[in-house]
Image (tube, one colour):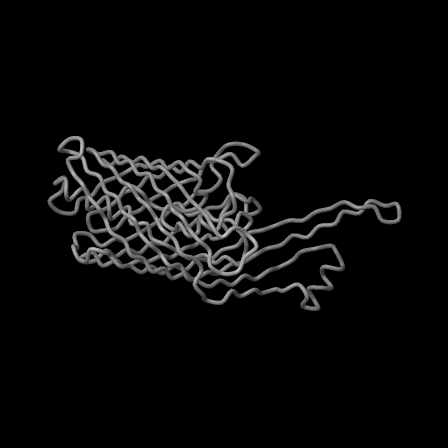
Length: 318
Protein backbone atom coordinates (compact mmCIF):
# COMPACT_ATOMS: atom_id res chain seq x y z
CA UNK A 1 0.00 0.00 0.00
CA UNK A 2 2.64 2.43 -1.03
CA UNK A 3 0.67 4.70 -3.33
CA UNK A 4 -2.07 6.85 -1.95
CA UNK A 5 -4.04 9.74 -3.37
CA UNK A 6 -3.07 13.41 -3.35
CA UNK A 7 -6.08 14.85 -5.10
CA UNK A 8 -5.51 18.15 -6.90
CA UNK A 9 -7.97 19.54 -9.45
CA UNK A 10 -8.50 23.01 -10.96
CA UNK A 11 -11.36 23.97 -13.23
CA UNK A 12 -9.02 26.60 -14.65
CA UNK A 13 -6.86 23.66 -15.73
CA UNK A 14 -9.95 21.72 -16.77
CA UNK A 15 -10.26 20.89 -20.45
CA UNK A 16 -13.72 22.45 -20.17
CA UNK A 17 -16.49 22.69 -17.62
CA UNK A 18 -18.75 20.24 -19.42
CA UNK A 19 -16.29 17.45 -18.75
CA UNK A 20 -17.53 15.87 -15.57
CA UNK A 21 -15.43 14.65 -12.66
CA UNK A 22 -15.75 10.89 -12.84
CA UNK A 23 -13.73 8.99 -10.25
CA UNK A 24 -11.71 5.85 -10.96
CA UNK A 25 -9.91 3.59 -8.50
CA UNK A 26 -6.33 2.65 -9.26
CA UNK A 27 -5.90 -0.40 -7.06
CA UNK A 28 -2.15 -0.10 -6.52
CA UNK A 29 -2.70 -0.56 -2.79
CA UNK A 30 -4.33 -3.93 -3.37
CA UNK A 31 -1.57 -4.87 -5.83
CA UNK A 32 1.02 -4.18 -3.15
CA UNK A 33 -0.80 -6.27 -0.54
CA UNK A 34 -1.08 -9.23 -2.92
CA UNK A 35 2.58 -8.99 -3.89
CA UNK A 36 3.55 -9.07 -0.23
CA UNK A 37 1.40 -12.16 0.27
CA UNK A 38 2.99 -13.92 -2.72
CA UNK A 39 6.47 -13.12 -1.50
CA UNK A 40 5.61 -14.61 1.87
CA UNK A 41 6.63 -11.45 3.66
CA UNK A 42 3.48 -11.53 5.78
CA UNK A 43 1.49 -14.49 7.07
CA UNK A 44 -1.36 -12.19 8.00
CA UNK A 45 -2.15 -8.47 7.60
CA UNK A 46 0.60 -6.36 9.15
CA UNK A 47 0.97 -2.73 10.20
CA UNK A 48 3.62 -0.55 8.58
CA UNK A 49 4.58 3.02 7.72
CA UNK A 50 5.53 4.12 4.22
CA UNK A 51 6.93 6.98 2.17
CA UNK A 52 6.38 7.51 -1.54
CA UNK A 53 7.51 9.90 -4.26
CA UNK A 54 5.57 10.24 -7.50
CA UNK A 55 6.87 12.09 -10.58
CA UNK A 56 4.77 12.76 -13.68
CA UNK A 57 2.23 15.03 -15.35
CA UNK A 58 -0.68 14.16 -13.05
CA UNK A 59 -1.67 17.46 -11.51
CA UNK A 60 -4.36 15.97 -9.34
CA UNK A 61 -4.81 12.43 -8.10
CA UNK A 62 -3.03 9.10 -7.91
CA UNK A 63 -6.34 7.37 -7.21
CA UNK A 64 -8.76 9.26 -9.47
CA UNK A 65 -7.16 9.29 -12.90
CA UNK A 66 -10.29 10.37 -14.72
CA UNK A 67 -9.98 13.64 -12.80
CA UNK A 68 -6.44 13.96 -14.13
CA UNK A 69 -7.77 13.42 -17.65
CA UNK A 70 -9.95 16.55 -17.32
CA UNK A 71 -6.99 18.89 -16.87
CA UNK A 72 -5.70 20.81 -19.84
CA UNK A 73 -2.11 20.33 -20.91
CA UNK A 74 0.25 20.85 -17.97
CA UNK A 75 3.70 21.83 -19.21
CA UNK A 76 5.53 21.08 -15.99
CA UNK A 77 6.67 18.10 -13.98
CA UNK A 78 4.69 17.36 -10.82
CA UNK A 79 6.47 15.93 -7.76
CA UNK A 80 4.14 14.23 -5.28
CA UNK A 81 5.68 13.05 -1.98
CA UNK A 82 3.43 11.21 0.49
CA UNK A 83 3.93 9.68 3.91
CA UNK A 84 1.50 7.51 5.82
CA UNK A 85 0.71 4.65 8.15
CA UNK A 86 -1.33 1.52 7.47
CA UNK A 87 -2.74 -0.50 10.37
CA UNK A 88 -3.35 -4.24 9.99
CA UNK A 89 -7.05 -3.63 10.69
CA UNK A 90 -7.26 -1.85 7.31
CA UNK A 91 -7.30 1.71 8.66
CA UNK A 92 -4.76 4.13 7.25
CA UNK A 93 -3.84 7.81 7.20
CA UNK A 94 -1.79 9.58 4.54
CA UNK A 95 -0.46 13.13 4.09
CA UNK A 96 0.93 14.53 0.87
CA UNK A 97 1.77 17.57 -1.23
CA UNK A 98 2.28 18.62 -4.85
CA UNK A 99 5.54 20.38 -5.72
CA UNK A 100 5.82 22.11 -9.10
CA UNK A 101 6.88 25.22 -10.95
CA UNK A 102 3.79 27.34 -11.65
CA UNK A 103 5.68 29.93 -13.71
CA UNK A 104 6.38 32.06 -10.63
CA UNK A 105 8.42 29.77 -8.40
CA UNK A 106 8.95 26.13 -7.44
CA UNK A 107 7.29 24.85 -4.30
CA UNK A 108 4.38 23.05 -2.67
CA UNK A 109 1.13 24.41 -4.14
CA UNK A 110 -1.32 22.25 -2.20
CA UNK A 111 -1.46 19.74 0.65
CA UNK A 112 -3.84 16.91 1.47
CA UNK A 113 -4.65 14.44 4.19
CA UNK A 114 -6.53 11.18 3.62
CA UNK A 115 -8.10 8.77 6.07
CA UNK A 116 -9.14 5.41 4.63
CA UNK A 117 -10.25 1.86 5.30
CA UNK A 118 -9.31 -1.05 3.01
CA UNK A 119 -10.56 -4.57 3.63
CA UNK A 120 -7.55 -6.75 4.51
CA UNK A 121 -7.02 -10.48 4.16
CA UNK A 122 -10.09 -11.17 2.00
CA UNK A 123 -9.39 -13.29 -1.11
CA UNK A 124 -12.83 -12.68 -2.64
CA UNK A 125 -13.45 -8.96 -2.33
CA UNK A 126 -11.45 -5.78 -2.46
CA UNK A 127 -13.31 -3.02 -0.62
CA UNK A 128 -12.12 0.50 0.20
CA UNK A 129 -13.50 3.83 1.40
CA UNK A 130 -11.65 7.09 1.92
CA UNK A 131 -12.11 10.74 2.82
CA UNK A 132 -9.67 13.41 1.65
CA UNK A 133 -9.41 17.06 2.62
CA UNK A 134 -7.36 19.41 0.46
CA UNK A 135 -5.58 22.44 1.86
CA UNK A 136 -5.48 25.01 -0.94
CA UNK A 137 -3.05 27.88 -0.62
CA UNK A 138 -4.49 30.04 -3.42
CA UNK A 139 -7.99 29.46 -4.79
CA UNK A 140 -7.16 31.78 -7.72
CA UNK A 141 -4.27 29.57 -8.83
CA UNK A 142 -4.69 27.27 -11.87
CA UNK A 143 -2.61 24.70 -9.93
CA UNK A 144 -5.02 24.34 -7.03
CA UNK A 145 -8.01 22.10 -6.47
CA UNK A 146 -11.59 23.35 -6.74
CA UNK A 147 -12.52 20.41 -4.52
CA UNK A 148 -11.63 20.65 -0.85
CA UNK A 149 -13.57 17.57 0.30
CA UNK A 150 -13.78 14.19 -1.42
CA UNK A 151 -15.48 10.95 -0.39
CA UNK A 152 -14.65 7.84 -2.36
CA UNK A 153 -15.60 4.15 -2.19
CA UNK A 154 -14.88 1.09 -4.34
CA UNK A 155 -15.70 -2.61 -4.52
CA UNK A 156 -13.92 -5.26 -6.64
CA UNK A 157 -14.57 -8.99 -7.00
CA UNK A 158 -11.26 -10.88 -7.17
CA UNK A 159 -12.15 -14.54 -7.75
CA UNK A 160 -12.73 -14.37 -11.51
CA UNK A 161 -9.99 -14.08 -14.14
CA UNK A 162 -11.38 -10.71 -15.21
CA UNK A 163 -12.03 -8.79 -12.00
CA UNK A 164 -15.12 -6.51 -12.19
CA UNK A 165 -15.35 -3.43 -10.02
CA UNK A 166 -17.40 -0.34 -9.28
CA UNK A 167 -16.48 2.93 -7.58
CA UNK A 168 -18.55 5.89 -6.40
CA UNK A 169 -17.32 9.35 -5.53
CA UNK A 170 -18.66 12.68 -4.27
CA UNK A 171 -16.58 15.86 -4.28
CA UNK A 172 -17.38 19.41 -3.15
CA UNK A 173 -15.48 22.68 -2.98
CA UNK A 174 -14.88 26.06 -4.59
CA UNK A 175 -12.37 28.10 -6.57
CA UNK A 176 -12.03 31.73 -7.67
CA UNK A 177 -11.28 33.70 -10.81
CA UNK A 178 -10.56 37.40 -11.23
CA UNK A 179 -10.85 39.48 -14.41
CA UNK A 180 -9.36 42.98 -14.41
CA UNK A 181 -8.91 45.68 -17.04
CA UNK A 182 -7.95 49.36 -17.01
CA UNK A 183 -9.64 51.58 -19.56
CA UNK A 184 -9.91 55.31 -20.29
CA UNK A 185 -13.40 56.83 -20.41
CA UNK A 186 -13.81 60.57 -21.11
CA UNK A 187 -10.11 61.08 -20.41
CA UNK A 188 -10.27 59.35 -17.00
CA UNK A 189 -8.65 56.06 -16.09
CA UNK A 190 -11.18 53.47 -14.93
CA UNK A 191 -10.33 50.18 -13.25
CA UNK A 192 -12.82 47.41 -14.04
CA UNK A 193 -12.88 44.07 -12.21
CA UNK A 194 -15.06 40.99 -11.90
CA UNK A 195 -14.25 38.54 -9.10
CA UNK A 196 -16.02 35.20 -9.52
CA UNK A 197 -16.52 32.40 -7.00
CA UNK A 198 -17.46 28.95 -8.29
CA UNK A 199 -18.94 26.38 -5.91
CA UNK A 200 -18.90 22.80 -7.17
CA UNK A 201 -20.62 19.52 -6.35
CA UNK A 202 -19.76 16.43 -8.39
CA UNK A 203 -20.94 12.82 -8.35
CA UNK A 204 -19.17 10.02 -10.20
CA UNK A 205 -19.73 6.36 -10.97
CA UNK A 206 -17.10 4.13 -12.62
CA UNK A 207 -17.37 0.56 -13.86
CA UNK A 208 -14.10 -1.31 -14.32
CA UNK A 209 -12.79 -4.69 -15.48
CA UNK A 210 -9.19 -5.83 -15.30
CA UNK A 211 -6.79 -8.68 -14.73
CA UNK A 212 -3.65 -8.81 -12.64
CA UNK A 213 -0.66 -10.71 -14.06
CA UNK A 214 1.86 -11.55 -11.34
CA UNK A 215 5.36 -13.02 -11.61
CA UNK A 216 7.58 -13.54 -8.59
CA UNK A 217 11.22 -14.46 -8.36
CA UNK A 218 11.87 -12.53 -11.58
CA UNK A 219 15.41 -11.38 -10.74
CA UNK A 220 15.87 -13.00 -7.33
CA UNK A 221 13.69 -14.95 -4.93
CA UNK A 222 12.77 -11.83 -2.95
CA UNK A 223 11.10 -9.81 -5.70
CA UNK A 224 7.82 -9.79 -7.64
CA UNK A 225 6.35 -8.07 -10.68
CA UNK A 226 2.68 -7.28 -11.34
CA UNK A 227 1.08 -5.89 -14.50
CA UNK A 228 -2.57 -4.80 -14.29
CA UNK A 229 -4.46 -3.51 -17.35
CA UNK A 230 -7.90 -2.16 -16.44
CA UNK A 231 -10.71 -0.95 -18.71
CA UNK A 232 -13.06 1.73 -17.32
CA UNK A 233 -16.38 3.35 -18.21
CA UNK A 234 -16.68 6.71 -16.43
CA UNK A 235 -20.03 8.38 -15.74
CA UNK A 236 -21.06 11.33 -13.60
CA UNK A 237 -22.88 14.60 -13.03
CA UNK A 238 -21.96 18.02 -11.62
CA UNK A 239 -23.49 21.26 -10.38
CA UNK A 240 -21.73 24.64 -10.43
CA UNK A 241 -23.06 27.80 -8.74
CA UNK A 242 -21.50 31.15 -9.63
CA UNK A 243 -21.25 34.38 -7.60
CA UNK A 244 -19.95 37.65 -9.11
CA UNK A 245 -18.46 40.65 -7.30
CA UNK A 246 -18.05 43.30 -9.97
CA UNK A 247 -17.93 47.07 -10.44
CA UNK A 248 -19.04 46.70 -14.06
CA UNK A 249 -22.67 47.82 -14.41
CA UNK A 250 -23.28 45.75 -17.54
CA UNK A 251 -22.25 42.52 -15.80
CA UNK A 252 -24.52 43.27 -12.85
CA UNK A 253 -27.37 44.02 -15.26
CA UNK A 254 -26.93 40.69 -17.08
CA UNK A 255 -26.84 38.86 -13.74
CA UNK A 256 -30.13 40.46 -12.63
CA UNK A 257 -31.73 39.62 -15.98
CA UNK A 258 -30.55 36.01 -15.77
CA UNK A 259 -28.41 36.25 -18.91
CA UNK A 260 -25.36 35.21 -16.87
CA UNK A 261 -26.41 31.94 -15.19
CA UNK A 262 -25.96 31.55 -11.45
CA UNK A 263 -26.38 27.77 -11.58
CA UNK A 264 -25.18 25.24 -14.14
CA UNK A 265 -26.17 21.58 -13.93
CA UNK A 266 -24.53 18.86 -15.99
CA UNK A 267 -26.86 15.88 -16.18
CA UNK A 268 -25.72 12.38 -15.26
CA UNK A 269 -24.31 10.70 -18.35
CA UNK A 270 -21.48 8.52 -19.60
CA UNK A 271 -18.38 10.69 -19.71
CA UNK A 272 -15.47 8.67 -21.06
CA UNK A 273 -13.89 5.31 -21.80
CA UNK A 274 -10.39 4.65 -20.52
CA UNK A 275 -7.64 2.15 -19.93
CA UNK A 276 -5.17 2.16 -17.07
CA UNK A 277 -1.84 0.31 -17.36
CA UNK A 278 -0.12 -0.28 -14.02
CA UNK A 279 3.26 -2.00 -13.64
CA UNK A 280 4.46 -2.67 -10.08
CA UNK A 281 7.85 -4.13 -9.14
CA UNK A 282 8.69 -4.82 -5.50
CA UNK A 283 11.93 -6.02 -3.98
CA UNK A 284 12.42 -6.12 -0.24
CA UNK A 285 10.87 -2.95 1.18
CA UNK A 286 11.07 -0.99 -2.09
CA UNK A 287 8.37 -0.61 -4.74
CA UNK A 288 8.71 0.89 -8.24
CA UNK A 289 5.56 1.68 -10.21
CA UNK A 290 5.28 3.24 -13.68
CA UNK A 291 1.70 3.97 -14.71
CA UNK A 292 -0.10 5.17 -17.85
CA UNK A 293 -3.75 6.23 -18.07
CA UNK A 294 -5.44 6.86 -21.45
CA UNK A 295 -8.89 8.48 -21.57
CA UNK A 296 -11.28 9.17 -24.48
CA UNK A 297 -14.03 11.73 -23.77
CA UNK A 298 -17.44 10.84 -25.23
CA UNK A 299 -19.81 13.89 -25.19
CA UNK A 300 -19.54 16.68 -27.74
CA UNK A 301 -16.66 19.03 -27.00
CA UNK A 302 -14.49 21.70 -28.62
CA UNK A 303 -11.40 20.39 -26.84
CA UNK A 304 -9.32 17.32 -27.52
CA UNK A 305 -11.18 14.13 -26.63
CA UNK A 306 -8.00 12.21 -25.88
CA UNK A 307 -6.10 12.62 -22.59
CA UNK A 308 -3.09 10.81 -21.22
CA UNK A 309 -1.64 10.80 -17.72
CA UNK A 310 1.65 9.22 -16.75
CA UNK A 311 3.52 8.84 -13.48
CA UNK A 312 6.41 6.97 -11.92
CA UNK A 313 6.23 6.19 -8.21
CA UNK A 314 8.95 4.97 -5.86
CA UNK A 315 7.96 3.76 -2.40
CA UNK A 316 9.57 2.38 0.75
CA UNK A 317 7.79 0.65 3.64
CA UNK A 318 9.08 0.08 7.15
